[in-house]
Image (tube, rainbow, N blue to C red; front, side, top):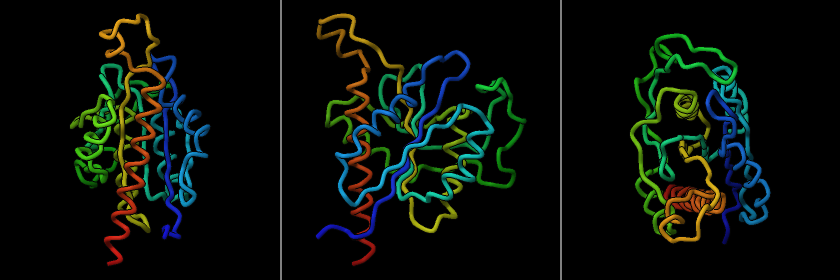
Length: 222
């Protein structure tokens, strides 16, 4: 018998920032929106675009994230040196002074004075990595989400979930730039992170989170 309680999923992506004119995490939101009909009937999925600015990340976590109060919060962002899906495991309570998409710099010091120095992802990165690899997607857990807007969103999202009314799986996933195939050689294809690979991996990630949430919910009611 299906679980009557809807599962609420929020997927976010960032826009362009200095040095990056096109962010694949933004494009991913539109592609996911086109595939909502594939989700189970008891799943509600919402996507949210976040400008790559310090202010937007802070405003998002204090307003939209808190209001939607998802069971699963999946944040995607670009990492230019990633080789595949980088499943971040730690968020740090600090930020760099690199300019954001509005050419603004963040203040020095902790983002949240007095808050924990680090917060751990509430989504099991090892299990998700294994599932992605089982489906042929390049994936690895990561201990360093950087100090830019991605890390800020990740930390604030985890911190906000501590005060949530429901248990929440929260993860930040870095993805590489998308590449168009340049050759038909197998060796070249293995190195390409394409739109189809990104979409297939996103489907696996969302399915994994739904399964984990259902398992946790059923375990808590026994």
